[in-house]
Image (cartoon, rainbow, N blue to C red; front, side):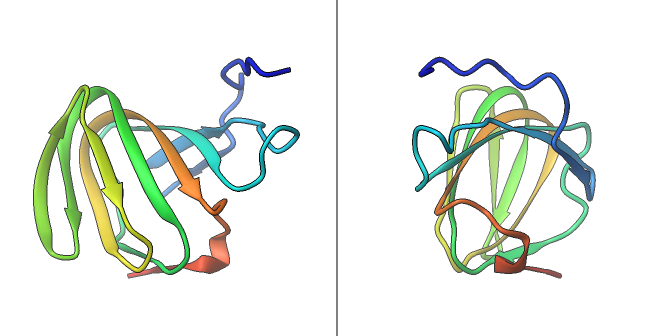
Length: 111
């Protein structure tokens, strides 16, 4: 199946965010897709050592702080976070996120 419906249940909830992981591994295995929601933002700062993240803002507004630089974001914006970056985000946001390669908890460092 190539059309994948939004998962019914949340796959994770931590540090002020919750999300649903789309089950795409039967079709592709190099990129992972998430739906991420937050009312206030991520409670921690992260150094992601291996993954490039791309966030598309479906709804809301806030800001991302990437490598010490704060940039406002809102509905319709695309946020690109290269591997090796330190980042966090704040605001009331609903986003689609991609991770290439697929995210694994041991790849990131929480500050």
